[in-house]
Amino acid sequence: MANYKSSPTKFISLLFGGAQRRKEQRAANEDFGAQMDKWEDTKMTNPYAGVKNPYASLENVYEDQTVDLKAAEFAKEQSQQNAANIMANLKGAAGGSGVAGLAQVLANQGAKQAQQAAADIGRQEQGNQARARAEAGRLQQLDVEGEQQRDLLERKGAQEVEQFDLDKQDKMLEIAGQRQAAAAQAMDNEAAQWDQFAMGAAKTIIGGVSDVRLKENITRTGVSESGIPIYTFSYKNKDQIWSGTMAQDLIKMGREDAVTIMDNGYYAVYYDMIDVDMELKTK
Image 1: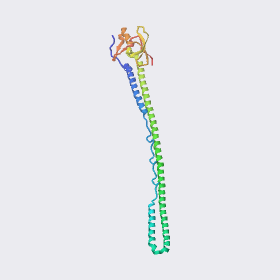
Image 2 (image 1 turned 45 degrees about the horizontal axis):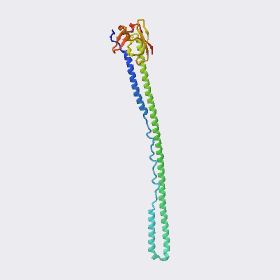
Image 3 (image 1 turned 180 degrees about the vertical axis):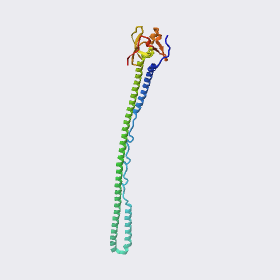
Image 4 (image 1 turned 135 degrees about the vertical axis):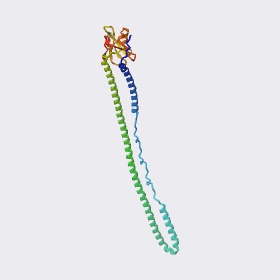
């Protein structure tokens, strides 16, 4: 009959804990991959691309300004009317001989008034030209300054996009490095636990967990002097190759004294009570 003493379950915890760790690692890797894909798909565009120069389309409001001819025309008409009135009033008093001399005086006055009107128009034209040139210079300066500002903004946006890509790549490398280090540490920890078990297995009261339900790749390699079958095998989800026996074989042979049931319901073997050793063949 099998021995039902309570026994340590460290090895079983390591065996099934490793499977759970691998399951969790796969889930974490999938989540990490999804997050990395989202991060990789994150894009930034130049916030200043296509910015317009606000001064590029301004028009010179003085470019087509015209001179005021109404005042000159009115002054001319008034002068002509005054001259006609004077001629009518003095025609009878001066007589025929005096009209010619008076006409000459009036003609001279008309010429002088025309010169004054022309001079006034010229001053208006000069003023218009001066204002048009000044406005053209102001608009040109605004256009140059606006274009410079637009170019600087676009360059600034391009630098921000480039810096964003660099920072993004650095972050991805940092995350990947942390992931790699964590995975390597987990594997080292698990390997250390297995090495600890392998070194202590022969020294414990239970030489090893020898339940066939926990093993795979089972190959019979011989029989001990007492007739106990010997096998090579690996524990499920593990690569190490072990040599030992099966608890179920010992029970069939009536060697329940060398078998115990652990708290989790699996069999283990007291290897110090049989002529078979449990050995780690490969790591």
